[in-house]
Image (cartoon, rainbow, N blue to C red; front, top):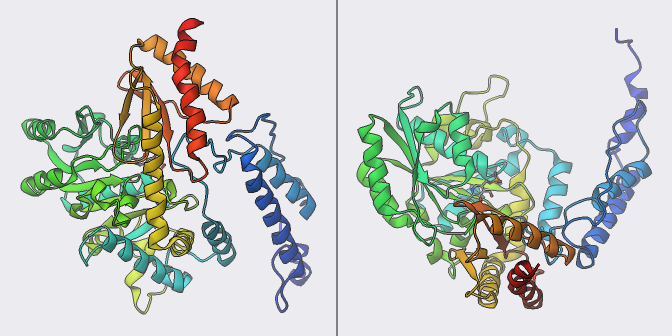
Length: 473
Ligand SMILES: Cc1ncc(COP(=O)(O)O)c(C=O)c1O
């Protein structure tokens, strides 16, 4: 039973920001927490990407709430045991350090606590989302009817693109359907088929060429196989920037095949999409503008704090046609053009658009170009430094490079990659270890702005001698 108490005496009120004057307790709390964060970021040069001594055990909520000092201690413990993306050697994955404006954007978004579900809960931010998505679509060369929504990560964007495709083809209630993607497409495509209730046999995988790009002749072959099996193809998924090699499928040619066969083209440009924002790199992802839907993840390269993904669609109306249910508990907006909840899988959404907008404003078009060009420059530099007589290197035109000793068998490659990854960690470099076409590789993603040529010299020296050291053991 709940006893009726005087709610004005609620001690937890103190934990919310006070009204009237600026709350001195909130201000000090923010200052202290920010100062800890700044120190943690500043230490990134000294520390490697992973904590040297991992010592973490989460204290759970107690009967009584804890003090501010205790909370600051909790934060400290998380920081001491956290992954450090700002360490110059953090080049394993697509998780670059955050831009300062993007950090501020996330903080402000939490403070505003608006909800992108509906315009009435986020008047300025809903409009911002619409306008920024259109700006991005326009930069990629998409038509004026294009729009988009921010969703929490590329996997959700890809899922939404495929659900849209199915809805558009009137296949939502059919089981005899197919999706075609390359064998190097991201696992989120397979995950999407599971979520959509499709059997594994609905995913047709197209082989790739030596550059990791989808083979056009095999694409034609797979389209015919789908037809032969009496299935209806709801979408072809092309990838602009594959996860292991950063390869870009031949988007223009694929778009022509889609148009000829009346099939929806979804481009997973979670990695490569942002290269379409700059005049100097747009040609590397030529053809994005022909997509019916495109996934783009600014979190992966541009220093936008996670999560930041956008699904763009060439016909804005398709989004609400597919996802709108009406929300009986919301009042109808006066100009209800942008109720996000009617356009996405998600209902309530935080204002992820804020940190993206502030980050892009802070960078400007020059800053965007410079980040993208520098990423690619680092990849080219590392590639030149790696001995191509001992390594088999796979890479596309972007900032990702994977490699393994050319003459090692599966077992040797597995052991070499494991051992070298561990050796590198001791020297404050973190590379990832993808399993690709039956063999382990080491992969470097050169999107960290703190990684200098000197770091890459050091890294390549270690890598170049790793093969002989392995054999001599
Ligand atoms: C090509 C590609 N698409 C989609 C995704 C999924 O993005 P997220 O991790 O934001 O869900 C990834 C993740 O690395 C990816 O590499």
